[in-house]
Image (cartoon, rainbow over the protein chains, first blue to last red):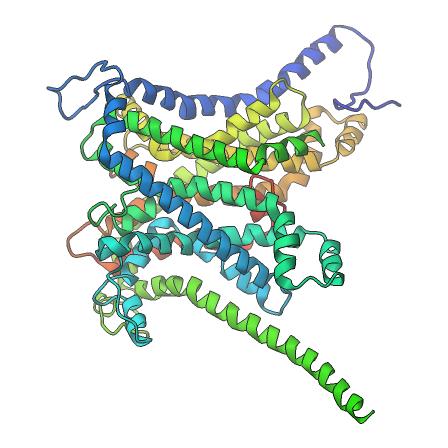
Length: 318
Length: 289
């Protein structure tokens, strides 16, 4: 009996209306299956975005009824582009994202290489190391705030114990950004680590054996064998981490609320203040759209530079 | 000749020594790593069992007499049970909906030839890219207009949406890995198409489904931004309760830590039990782990 390649082969029956009805049913089946997902996507995902675009052309301010509420043209966008606070927030977010991604990538890669050794106890430690990314971000923020208290926090106690000067942590504009970065790197390095470790474990053995026979040392092997072979995994991990770092909100909101003196005022904290303290919703929507375009541009540049789409297309074509 | 004999064991010993040294160094590094990554977890847990006077003590107390008063205060005064029930209902329903809808869509994308299949798949994935702060305003306005503010419904819809890209992408990979020939054999044996899905495909998918469920549960359970904007009292979830413990002038750190422990425990237990496909889930099926 011949079984067709593409579609599932169904036992052939005599031609007739039942067969036709069945074929129509088979053709609409995927859309029935996709229906609920597309509905949720449209209603909760895309409709709010369109609504937001509409709002961004208005001066909607529910708490200031005396001001213009209707169509204001491009005024909001013009205001956003000249708004120093928005520019500063965007710049800060880009710095935060870059430092956080690079540090968690380096640290995660180092951890992955260390725990790739098959030593007794390492699988157990690997599981324990996932804890930071599992703990609710709000609790992460609370815990680090307790530990970073300048006067009686345990971190300054430990610094004094090893003979270093205590830090001001989130209390000073010069150390606040480093402090929230520390929290972010602490929380998300485990994410990088488990993905990269899985990537390392899946690599074939023979290139490493060949490198060893050719007399390559560990450093050359790392740069010339491990990194190139691990590239697809690194690209995915970095892409996901980048998207998440760009929208970091929970921990920063809990640890510093964007302060002191806007030193940690990333775009999501800035937008939150704009929308829900000043209720400047028209302007907030315009800024939201600019943020959306910024992350889109960031992802596109990254995808272009790394050839990520080509990898995906190759995979699909296989 | 004598030189040679003396030399050989040294080489042998030095190689052995080097191996021992490397192992010792690996364990030492692992120890440092554990200290850095687990100390805050330890500090959160111990703080939750400390009386307020112990949390604020300097030098910090590493040995103290544990107390349950934070947990009692959490459940009696702050009525954490209500928030816990809200969290369970909202996250539970959203997780179920996302799993059902997402698996259906994944099946369609994996098994049927549809025009624009890849475009659809990327459309679904793009949800993951959207910063939540961007869709907050319209959802807030919609919630006010439709009277959905401080009710669970909109949150359920949002968490369902956020879970969908994971389910669709991960389950698509899992379904593609099941050979079609198994399904075809069932069809030939007289199974109906839906019967074939329920009796043959679904059981093979169960491990993948469970792993995906844990991941989307985790993200919804930990979500704070939407919950903080769309709820105020009746529908508030655990993260809101924990954040509120920080609001008053005199912050009760022990109480906030206790809220953190209660909130984090379910996710930690679930994920540690379901580690098998975790990496694959987190990377949308792109990395096998």
